Length: 496
Ligand code: BES
Ligand code: MN
Ligand code: ZN
Image (tube, rainbow, N blue to C red; front, side, top):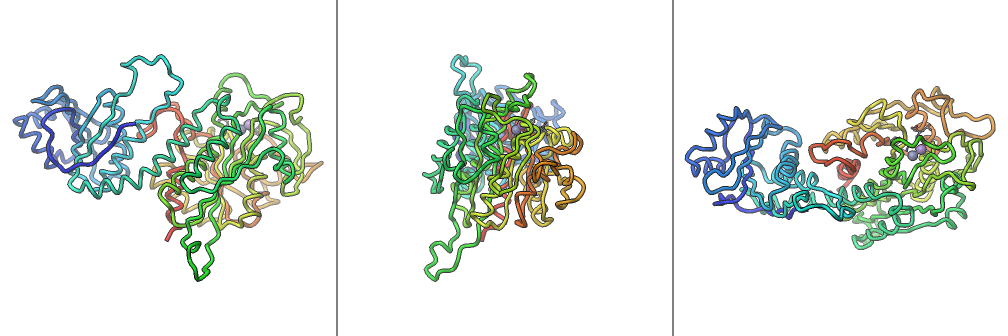
């Protein structure tokens, strides 16, 4: 990852420069100084290249004057949402093979300069620990980025705050990218324990404890695997009332719950071979919750937040759950398991009920790569948002819009109505699949709803957005870290 620093706006005399230029084609003071140093060469080059300044456009000058390279990036219209972030992403993508670059960010506010740095850092993410034979020219070299700003102190302070969130995103991406032979439930839990050094309280419950609690739904998923399950409970106690000697009571926490299926083979209802490798990232919900806890602890958020993740592996074997089996969930409701590939909802049912009864949270939000059907419905642009509360749904959608992790609201009905009725079982209280393939993401959400009581709750189906087949503006292809920035932004709305 490149080291990013902020400095006073002094034009470097050599090296690699990046100059953002917007649609007005006006130069920042440093851009104007550069143009002058190049004897109007910058302006003439942009004209020759028909450079318009539109976002996404660029022009490169090779070896102008004493410089190695000048990259001019289209900055679009002033104040475009997340424009600076996307510029940073474009720099990381275009100049990965340079060792050091200076960015003429003196035309931007300190916040924009920090956002540019964040975008650069997020796009520069790489997961190369298993690439032992990468040749030198295949490696990213960008090691030093200097952002030239008219307010470098403020920009550095703003970037410092954003760095905590970036670290959370990077942690989530690492977890999601790890293969399932490395990241099984016990190893995932061990990585969660590292958050202790950020001040997060971490409890790990194993097979025995979950058995004693009566986590029949989660354990039904896990029982076919040679790997033991875990539930990790992470608490950030940042409410200032904890320090308050006048015994003012801390507010109830916000609770975030994640599906952590470290590998989903489908179990006895086994998946087809093609693409099954993708199911190593069926723990992306749990990964996002873990990254979120790192983010809010890293920036010392001033409220209480709990993160709970259910970690299992869904495998076929002689001890695996059979289609038709009936189990008793932690809530006491019995579940007829008709398809062992509808396993995420079983894990979440127990963890949601545990979170709700132990912490009596103000609200709960779960994240899960829950259904293939959400990809059919929404593709890879929006995650599905289901909520039993309109205000909560609105707050989440707004936070998502602000950080570019977008949510689209989907329907949810009350118990006993339409979609929900599909879940009635002739032998148990509920079955784990609906009547057919139609509305599969909705019946999955309805299943969860039966385990959340009256607590305000939202469910984010992130199956379509947790992994990218293509590069995004600030997400290199692969694990996106979706959910960390969104929920960090959402949490901010509850602080102070
Ligand atoms: N983990 C999958 C959902 C999924 C599919 C995530 C593709 C990411 C990409 C989930 O456990 C699953 O298998 N869901 C089934 C449910 C069905 C059996 C009712 C599905 O979507 O097909
Ligand atoms: Mn499945
Ligand atoms: Zn799954």
